[in-house]
Image 1: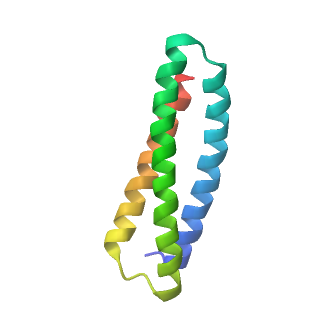
Image 2 (image 1 turned 90 degrees about the vertical axis):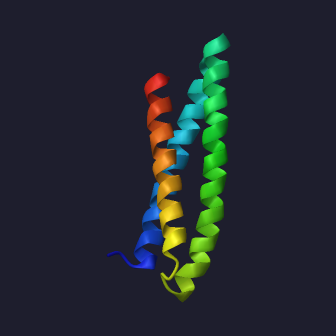
Length: 96
């Protein structure tokens, strides 16, 4: 089982990767036209909301990292958010 610090580092790396992909998606959505752009923008907006949620979780995780990995519910929630972001990114990348 990973330590809290290892998990925090892994999540930070994922966020960096997500952010690169999100920036690429922003460019591609901006280049799309009409109805397609509207649909992609709506999904991108939802993805960005999830990304903000990940930031909230990461703030909590960074605080918990100093103490210990005691809250499995937080860990489970973070995994769910990151998994969701990854899936949304993959789905949007496949569409643009």
